[in-house]
Length: 178
Image (cartoon, rainbow, N blue to C red; front, side, top):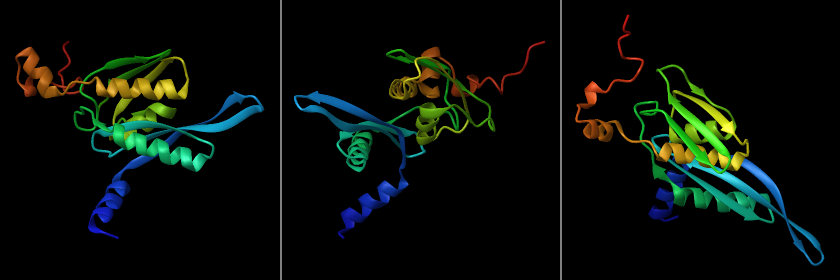
């Protein structure tokens, strides 16, 4: 193995890869139905980069490989505030809506199914979520990804408001009034 191949293998080991959906799909042809598998994979580095890929093939292993390759190409950074997200977000894709809410340290990932897979792959450790509308796995995962990519960093938000980053405190650090 060359040095470049070794480096690629090391990068692959660092990634958190999760198969979140395997669906059997059919194509109707003259002689009947041709079955294939559609696989959805989420890949993240657990440090703020995440991507999702969909692969279709006649066999499951080939579909997983295709989805994994596409997910790696799709990886993009998301804004995080420590172990949580900087602000609330409601994201929608098709009929699926996902609400993402920052949580205080120690809360954990309060999410189910595809939302949990996407958030854990991205490296979020404390968050509250609620899936609203459709429960289609593919649409819920895509909505979650859209929500994460729509987050703005604390530094950017502070600059837009004309404040210092230290002035924008998370809700659990604010003092309670009366």
